[in-house]
Image (cartoon, rainbow, N blue to C red):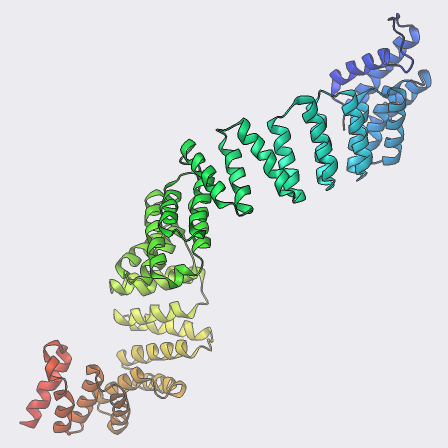
Amino acid sequence: MKSSGIILTLLSIIICLSSCKNQEKAIKQPNDNDIKVAQMVIDAATQREIGNTETACSLYEAIIKQQPENSLAYYQLSSINYEQRNIARAIEYNLKAIELNPKNHWYRTQLAEIYLQTKQIEKAADQYRAVIDLQPNVTEYYMELVAIYTEANMFDKAIEIVNLLEKRQGVNEYCSMLKYKIYKQLGKQEKATKEIEILCKEYPSNVSYLSTLAQNYLSKGEDKKALSLMKKVEEIDSNNIENIVALLELYYKKGEINLAESYIDKLCRNTQMNFEEKNQLILTLYQEKVDNDSFTLKCYMGHLETMAKMYPEEGRLWQFLSIAYMRTFRMADAYIACKKAVEYGVNDLDLFKNCIIVQQVNDDPKEIIETCDKALKYYPREVIFYIVKGHNLNAIGEYTSAIEVFEKGLKLKTRQEDYLIDLYNGLAEAHYRTEKYDQAWNFFEKVLEISPNDFPTLNNYAYYLCIENINLDKAEEMSKKTYDAESRNITVADTYAWILHTKGEHLKAKEVLDKFLDSKDNWSATVQGHYEEILNAIK
């Protein structure tokens, strides 16, 4: 509450010389004492400005000794004491200043401020009421008093002051909106509606008032009235974002889905709202339907595609779009969307997982390895990325690197059996390819300890034993178990037939593969080669 330099000093002199309690009607010439006090006022103001508050206080106290009825000195002492948090003294001095000059509104507003800061709400309000009596044409004082009452939840008194202002100024926007807000807080819906109706009548092209009244009608269940107003707003401003949102929500609530969707489309094309806000609003509207209703999912996907043209570098948009594409089995589109989401800075765990799924479309192991490396920068303890990276390193023949990656994954000590099976299988494959057969067999055995009926493992383990021409009885037992479970799988059948052939049981091997002769044109080169060799062995 520091004084404002020279201007305040000059004002102080004027007050000092012209506002004594028993002011005379005729202007009299200042005497020597008046001049001396005026100089002391200037000195005190100067000392306060440069931070010498002690000296300033001493000067103001001296002024009071010279002029006991000098209200300004008390006013300034109150201000200084308040700054120093001497609240009781500040109030005492301020009350004295008002006693000496009760018509000075500056004194009263300062005291009101002190009361407000010390939570003496009613006393502060009393001062502003007195100020309004003194300055009835100053709107600011009414506003201050309304704010005081509103913050103190004294709404009836706030309305009283607004009505007082309205009586003086006539019906106006400020008063009507104030009363509207207060009535809303009080839950007096009818009175709130009446105030907005007054404004809409007075300002028929004001979309803000029309929209507010429409929302009021909606809250009362008067949808027809609300819709009429919304349509009027649309005529005035077809791109008004609040109105578009209100219309799409109303139509969706009424079950008029096609109309609602047309306004969602308008929302998506509107530039007044960002993507995140639009997307959140749409998802809030759709709720669980976006997950379990194909029509809603298709609509959502279309809206995302519309927004993608407006926000081509919005990573989160591409992430949501990739999910929509995956759910509709548009994997090539999902692949592109995932790449863009990562490119534009989305580092979400689920996004990276989706990326390595859809990247199978291109069947590019190096690209998948690159995605895993990006993911591991952010999620170094996510085992899935070690697994996928390791298997793709195996796919391009980098077996030593694959072993290192799988071993890093094992060090995370996952308890998830599926992950352990994948890690052990990857290590078995890499060790087998680097001719470390004992390690390969060991990891295959680890898988079977966890899951004795893991058929891919049984098939591969049996096949590799057969290739190495060792432990053929065990190989046959594992392969037979797999074949019995998946007898229509040509890969499984080929393994079983080849083991039988290796053991010299050529006719049984032929019988196994003969069951697939109707699809012989689709056999892989490996299966065809095996079958030819079996036939040659029979001849």
